[in-house]
Length: 194
Image 1 (tube, rainbow, N blue to C red):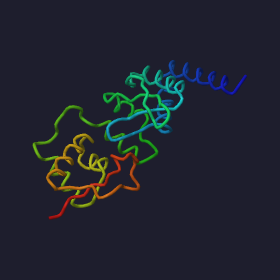
Image 2 (tube, rainbow, N blue to C red):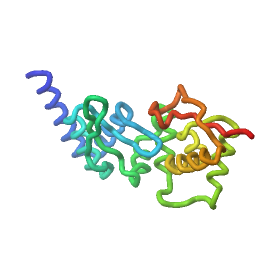
Image 3 (cartoon, one colour):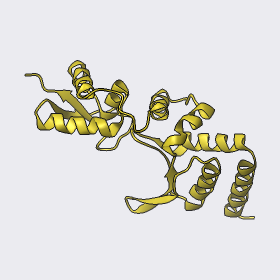
Image 4 (cartoon, rainbow, N blue to C red):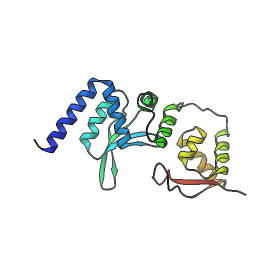
């Protein structure tokens, strides 16, 4: 038997076990999140370069009701295959696998899991004020502001854009130790002192 055949046979056994036992399914999904998961400012994703591995994992997550549609995305000169975790299922998943061993990932996962989807928790202008107060103390990334203000990354970005247009804030560089290294999430924002 070749290495590829052995690997396919083992994946099939793992898939069969996971589809028949929710605890195994959750454990496999939790390990995939630790190994290949992207726990970002707005979503929790799992993407692989191997389509067959991604399909196996998607089948497991989908059997639990946790997976959004399977998809592919272009990454440099190849495609990655995978899915995101449904926003409505994040809290349930976290309660089964949390806390995560990486404190930064755990903090973001908990934040995403506990968000009140579609609810405005503050009065007009309160979030903008909280963002400015936070930036007066120290420069921060969107992710750090999201956690500080207990709001979504898109809301933080919208406020930062408006505040930047009014010359209240500016980007002063990149956070070298940023949790996510993408161009947008590593921007370090600061209040402009006048």
